[in-house]
Image (spheres, rainbow over the protein chains, first blue to last red):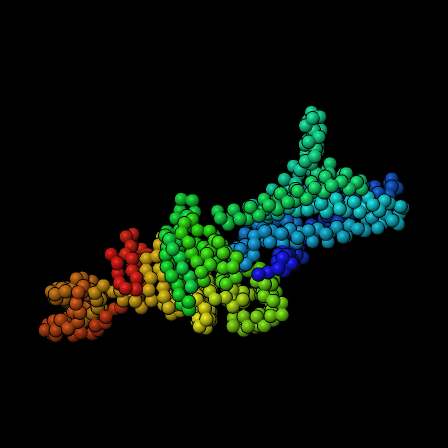
Length: 247
Length: 321
């Protein structure tokens, strides 16, 4: 019998092995670089152009548009994750290895998060620039990056789920984008509602939670929102993968 | 050992497998034969634990395909139909990745991979990307992945499909070399392959096993009576009339008639009529050019079993009504 420590090591090692292959797939795909360039160019432009106009040393101009940028960047990164496995039939190979299905889902999730973390590492140049320009709030910057990662995890889980629904990457992207966009719209939609319902609906939205964290306010409710959202869609992914196999 | 009992799989209203029961003993190489859509792939997917059965059960080495799926998957090697591989990996990476997911201890990677690579003849392409490989080499990579952890049981879904005759031969030889230690279940629709490589053949049609036995026994059991090819120098009509008089002859078919020569296929039900045929021909002063008994090949068995609507079940003991 395996000891609990050995069992958990096995559990993570297997997921990491799957993540490693998926990461190598990302790094070998030209699409990844196209998306990365678009993302970095867009955020760079949005960050830099108002910086000199207002002379403010904040990350706001980078952070504000991030939710909407992520609604299409992250589904574009995750669209291949499962759809490609279904299209090429390699899911059958994975499915007959001695692995639990959730190890596969977790592995793919970790790979996407690894890729997003790499992308975000490039954006660290923006806060570093701020330190040259003035005295930004370090706490706020750290909080912002936590917030970004939380939102990315939530969107990545949605993207994975969308990818598990179809063998067509484009369809996976459209579904992923649409669902992310609906979560993005909840706050806007809330403004149209009577005030009793507005608070509740706004809590479901991305920006309510993103703004709070981005201001440097670390609230466990916001962390819980990202965590439970990601968890929900990862479970949905697992269920979909299993259901597709059972047909 | 592979054991199924009443194994059934339905996809909605379609029954892909219909109460299939059989036992495969350790060390046997068994060919699962059937036309496309007969249920071969479904059967293999059930046995590997990829799909759950609708009814019935299957056990491999006493592990249930549903309840002990994870342990079962450790003890089998599987080559899926169409051999899906990750094109972006190099051959060595792909094997190493499989070794990691199969939880082979890291210090054994090199040795395990070398052994599989040598057996499958992959030494020359080890560093190449899988996307650059020919179909034959891809198939070998799939096989190498399947035997990497030295499983007791190998399940191969059409291991030779898409290969040229030389490559087919190589793959079959490879399977033969694995025979000493392993139980192999392979599916195919190429009959000669089953005939040469397998100890035993299961013919499956419309989700049911319609025949089970060695290739030789199956051919014998289906040879109902005798078939003779007869060629003689005589007019077709006269010869046909004469041969038809022989007691026991059930059917004569004229196959060819050229310049006073006739070629017949003569079928008799109960007895060997060769002596009588010879005597009649001598009696009429005709010249006998050939008399060849025609044996039923596995191909005939296959065609007979998988085209008739009302199939007869055949097993090693004989034909069941």
